[in-house]
Length: 217
Image (cartoon, rainbow, N blue to C red; front, side):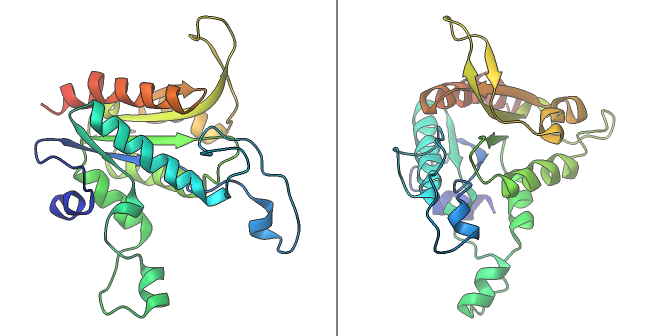
């Protein structure tokens, strides 16, 4: 799996640690559910520009992964860039290979990665990353301090928020989910806030340099 990931990511360096970046691939676009209706898309820090197509958030995640990779000794990647078809794609495209379910892929990617980053935004369609942020910590038994097979500090939740003071150190959360908000208590993993794309890049870079790389040595 390590080889497949590195072959799929053009900027990967063999000496890099792998870091799996998971986040919404599209906005919560009502038109996705209700056809032939016009809706105003909500603003989102992962949208590449105002009025951008809802599925272009994936492009932003890919750009963030590449930028952090350039600034750290890590190859940060998103799952859709790895050349393994899902079970759905196998059926739709009538492929001869068996494929892997999305959750099985996420767990397999996490197993060969030194760190895992989960990104949540208020206007992002986060059902996928929500499922992954439950399945992956459970796979590594993070709830059991005696049985866990990974250091929980190599996992981090990044949630959208607004800065509430001038120095940028305090945030008011914009994304809210009772389950996600308490994952730091349930799994002892890290939790961080970001206000925009630059802030998210900075926070993920700090996470990789301060926790992922040192704890993987």
